[in-house]
Length: 280
Ligand SMILES: N[C@@H](CCC(=O)N[C@@H](CSC=O)C(=O)NCC(=O)O)C(=O)O
Image (cartoon, rainbow, N blue to C red; front, side, top):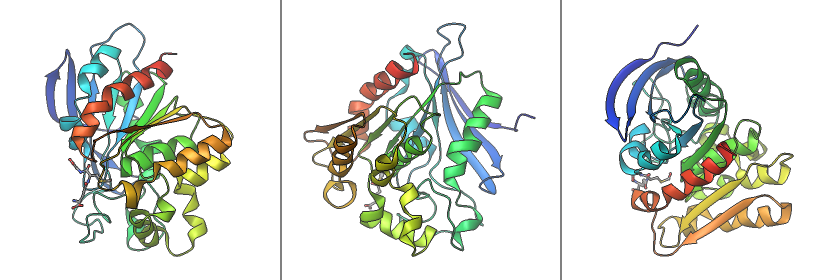
C-alpha cells in the first residue's frame, strides 16, 4: 500500500513543481521531510531520479534553495529528490557539536546507543526513500546520486555499495576517506563504536578497492576550500581509482571554497554528467 505523504509546500518552478513532503519513517522511527523537483514531462517515458544528499548542518532545503539546480533539471527532464541529513524530532539523540547528531547522520546505520534507536540513514536512503518515491510519483527505474561534503561521502559510498541501483554518482567537495579524517573518526566512533573494522563498509577509499562493478563518478573540489586539507583529501580516492582502473574524474576548481556558491557554479556539469548516463 502506498505510504502516506503530507504535502507541506508547493511552488511552480521552471515549468515544473517544487514540493516538500513529510512522512512517517518506520526505518528511522521518526517523522521525516524531503523535497522533490518534478520537471514538466518531456515524453511519455517516466523521468529518472537524481537523489541529492547534503552536508553537515543541512536539511533538504539547503540544496533546494541555494544550488540552483532546477533550471537544468527541467531542461533535461530529471526529477530531483533532496533528502534530509539525519533523523529528526525531540526524542532523537543529539549532540552539541555541529558534526554529530541531528544534521550529521553520515548516511550510516548506527550500532551504538543512544544513536541506534533512530540513526539508520543508510537504510533510509538506499531502501525506504526510493520505495516511497516509486510508490507516490511517476518516475522511471533509472536513478543517480549526488552529494556535497558529508553528502558527497554518502553519495559515493552508497553508489559503491549499490552499483546496480545507480547509473552514476557525483560529489562536490566530498569526504572520501572518513575512517581517516577528523569528521569521520568522531562520527564513526560514536555511531559505530571503537572496532574500526566496522567503519570500513562506509569508507569510499576502502569500498572502491573492493568494487566488483563500476559506477561512473565525477568529483569537483575547490582549491580554496577551508576543509580541503583536514577533512576531504580527494587525492586519496583519485589514487585508488588510478590503481583500480575505476572510472572516476576529479576536477580541482581554482579559487572555489566549500560553500553553496561553489555548488551553484558547477552543478550544471553534474546534472549533464548524470543525464549522459541516465538517458544513455
Ligand atoms: N558550521 C560549521 C560548518 C558547517 C558547514 O560548513 N556545513 C556545510 C557542509 S560541511 C560538510 O558536510 C554546509 O553545507 N552548510 C550549509 C550551507 O547552506 O552552507 C562550522 O562552523 O565550521
